[in-house]
Image (cartoon, rainbow, N blue to C red):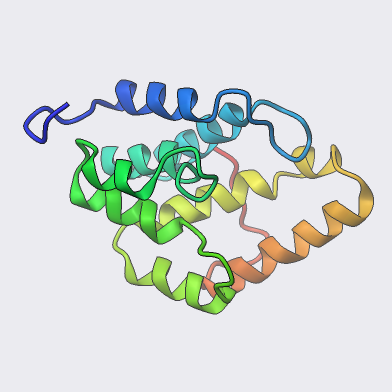
Length: 157
């Protein structure tokens, strides 16, 4: 694809599904279910197409499923690329720096909110062992606080 032929949402979804093929979440579910839930969560929260595109790709670079170079060269808007990069955790990065980058990037907070909402879904957490579920619950609550999102407002979309 060239810059003059931007990827469609369907093309972005297909790319994300292919990139994460064979990957499972902590509960052993296909990872594409998480991507779909985050994309739908962004849509339900009033997100635009660029944010929905970023939702599909939000873990691709972080999980080494797609390279940062692929992202930079992809036929995506600059805003979509910036959102994906904002929500991509960097090795050894303090949570405060990660949250600050999300808050400084237009459109990224909504994507991260949808991601946190799905990650903190009680049904998903119930599928994990007790210590892991508690650790992740605390981790997600801390990130919500750093992002200025009220606790307990997870709205799974």
